[in-house]
Length: 552
Image (cartoon, rainbow, N blue to C red):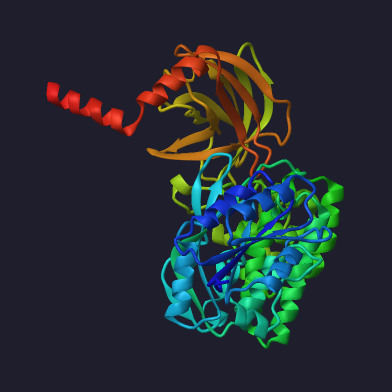
């Protein structure tokens, strides 16, 4: 048998439906001299039958079945490494794909210069909406060869093992295998690969297609999307400690601040957006696991974070669970803190009192948010719905409270507007915000969703209303936070002749905005939308433009 140039391992467990797509992406590679190993972690569905059929169809495909389920990705990858015949190795998950030129591009980089591994760009595809993005684009923007991770420690953020092609000799020389019996094995394996590599090459070409299902059912969600499990938190922290130990043992403790920053900015941040939705018992367990590790991190790593994230971390370390929930709402969005307290020197701090510890004063100091001096269009306000009442049909009455900790709004009533744009035409509902106390305003707005002007073919999708404020000719738009939980309200509306089912609900994740969902029904769904889709194509639109220009 001809020795293959590259062995690509496809790990699979109970994924008979998507396995053929993954293997098809390998059979379609422009570099054909490859070996494909399907490594089955003892599936109990139709995966064995599907895998054997794929092996029968293509002599490059081999099927390996583990004698018992390992519960992770490491064992099936390691067993495949044991039988791989090629000098270069790659890994693919059964729910993902490789772009057609992935193997060719990475192998060419190896042949151009002897390196321990090559890596490229990862394209992420949202399964729910088809949106495509590049994972860590700033790290793979240009072609370059690095003499070790110290040349660019930011690469610690790119911890995927699947975006790389490894020289088998490199893995064997260092006895580098995936750690078994733990989750987040990619992070440890990649940290070790980065730390042990004498040189590696980065190319900007897409080499992996990663399908993301952010709202998959919790029972079938990927490990990284099982953040609701306390065991998931413990697993992630455990791997971080293993990485820390590796850095010390390999003489690379100098990378610790960069690695700690990566943990705070990426790993902890993944949990932070969910914290407002967790109960006291969960948050207490989370703090018990997280805080001892947070205390070991470099102070310089905290200093590199945005201030809102530092506030959440400090409140967690102080055990202020209610404060954690409050501060975590709006992370990643321009949302003001609910309350700010200044000391005798005028320094503003998060919360209702001045911190009593040096660390608290350092971490909760909001001076760098420039609450009083930011341009009005980027000023920080906080808009919250304090009461939501359904009216007749699709009408709602919302009580909105606006917090202005920087005192940017003048004394007295304020003109405001609620903005909603389900189609191309925006619905603006004016209302008044009356002062409650300095820096706090409240108003009531009547929102009738039947007044929203929708396209003739209807609108299918989700929108989040915003609050518009104006001052001296300048405008400011900010998101509207909803109660974290309330019963979804559903009504049928006829807008512009288009029939829809409209649902008002809490966003249920991230900042928790008010969320409004439109679903065309009746003739709108069965007739109008299919007709418009056929007409609204580039070729048809261009033909209409040509006819229109000819008639001028």
